[in-house]
Length: 119
Image (cartoon, rainbow, N blue to C red; front, side, top):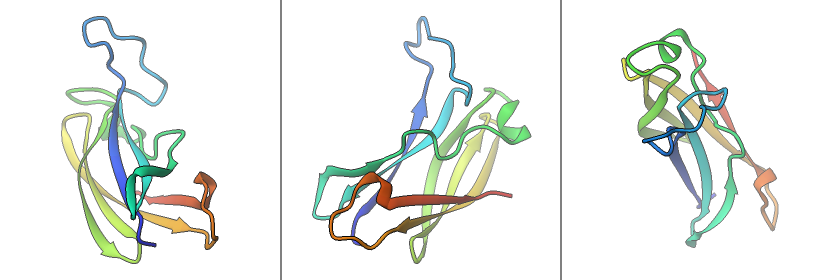
């Protein structure tokens, strides 16, 4: 729709010297936001919870447990993307996401949904 998908890593090891207890989803996870294509300082939508977090065996246990850390993204067209990520700082994995929008004149964060396809 002309807007920008921003994927970012949520790292909950903070402060590093005396970190707070990790949330249930683990240390690192994938967050997202939709930025206005005409003014990228305008955030149209933002995830309230991680889009992807450690669930699979290779994400839960490894060099760093409970980690999914996004490393890259490739567009497949039609608002579909392949996301490349590290799992538990041990493996590299890929999964597909699709951004869906509702056609409306004024958009709110409820106007966007991102579906995740993981094997």
